[in-house]
Amino acid sequence: MEFSYYLPVNLKFGWQMVDRIGELTKPYGKKVLIVTGRSSAKRSGLYDRVVDALHQVGVESVLFDKVQANPLTTTAEEGARLATEEECDVVIALGGGSIMDCAKGIAFLAVNEGNINDYIYNRLRSDKALPLVVVPTTCGTGSEGNGFGVLTNPENGDKKSLRCSAIVPKVSIVDPACMQTMPRSVLASVGFDALCHLIEAYTAKSASPITDAFAYQGLSLWANHFVSVYQGEDIKEGWEAITLASTFGGMVINNAGVTLAHGMEHPASGLKDITHGKGLAAIEPVCVDASWQGNPEKFAHIAKLFGATHGGDVGDVLRQVLEKIDLRLSLSDLGIAFEDIPWMVENCLKVGAGNIANNPVMVTGDDIRKLYQQAL
Image (cartoon, rainbow, N blue to C red):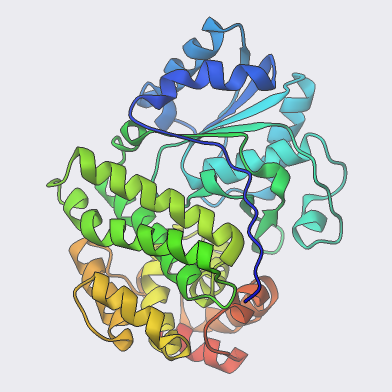
């Protein structure tokens, strides 16, 4: 046995933990760039709450509120210019995975020269970034627990991760109370993304005993609580469970990575600006059907957590879960057409090569084409 595990993340978990953001941020600087979407953090009151907490400890703030779903490399560049112009020395992200990923790109570009796409494709390397503090408001991507920032290049549709230990947050404030303003449709989408992270990391070729422990615990928490939280039946304990499961998912993919379904979904959302969790809802079950035999024992463990018995049942388990959370979708439902498949196969082989190599079974471009067709 041989493996490595490294993850320098400082998690602060608990109800109303966000009220400590001032004291937790102050050691890293005197002026912060707050990165949000256009409205949700303001509408929920979280933005004002954070600004007040920062001002109470003498920390100034500047707002960058231009991040949208599937954040663009150009948006990260714009945010980095503002951080530099305003002489910000810390970046705070308030929002879901898109916000946190874009904030990571901003923190990185604020202190690194050159084109971010060169860093994404490892043509350039750096191990520095502005300190980053994050407050996730969705329990899906787990971006609070890793050094990945997924960005889309608007010039060619490439959706791929910037990966660097410097963009692991200095402080991740994981407050279940901040999740409860999500619409149910958003909860379903982000929650399924978290489940996919856990499944893929658990069954990946790069899995280790440490990632297995976190992933299995996260899968257990998700299986026991998510549907009941979605249906409004499981309040405090359930929100804690699914929030923690999401964070575990982010942590395990930092080391074990993701597999085929994520590699196939990124071209779809890069091409059509699809919500990531919805894309996975169409793609993950068919990928599991095609992959479970590469690790039947672990897939059987997953099946048993959901009341099934055999590794080959997991694809159908996912379909049943998707029915319960009103997320049963096809790629056709999301605007993908048959004629889009050749580009997506080519792009998957380009941006998702690592995900494909990490999958429990080997797949070819022709296999990927057939799976896209099944997902239509």
